[in-house]
Image (cartoon, rainbow, N blue to C red; front, side):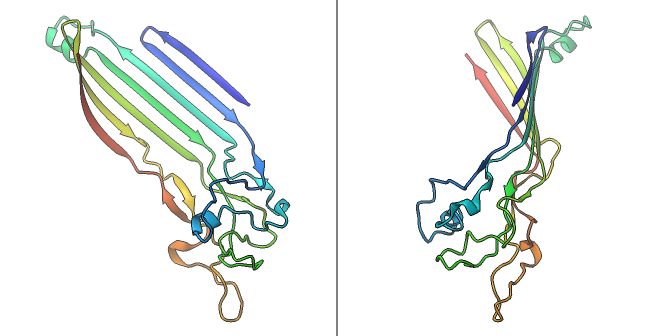
Length: 219
């Protein structure tokens, strides 16, 4: 289900706001698991190939809520002063931005051991826990661009660009630690990961706040 609100370009301003609600369930289909013995590919295989119904649950791609807002605001010639230098300095700016907010990625609690003795220790979940029963924190990123155009005649212009990514500097988690247990000890008792490997802690982050400058010449 999707909603969209749009303002077409008028008086130097346009924006687009969209919200999507969705829900996806499957039994872990993944055609990219093509290298047996590779940890990354083995983790994509259903936990029990003799009964794929055990993996029926929330899809790896399930993102229930997603909101995106983009805006462009164009300022032409500054006319509130007669000073030619100030008018030149404050004219021909374009401000644009895009903000994306959505639900975090789902993940399962794994055991780090081959419980069902199928030769694959990367796809066994904690018994009694459903697939993708956990979810990382929500994702939120805001990017912004400021462009200053300087015209040279009618066919050439110089564009000075400043851009910022993840302006709110939010800690966005792309992948958390998924092993609730890290295998067995000598007494066949599950061992628990410690320190930075603890279940649910962030493992892969989206980049922090970044800025960049650019110059473009159109002719």
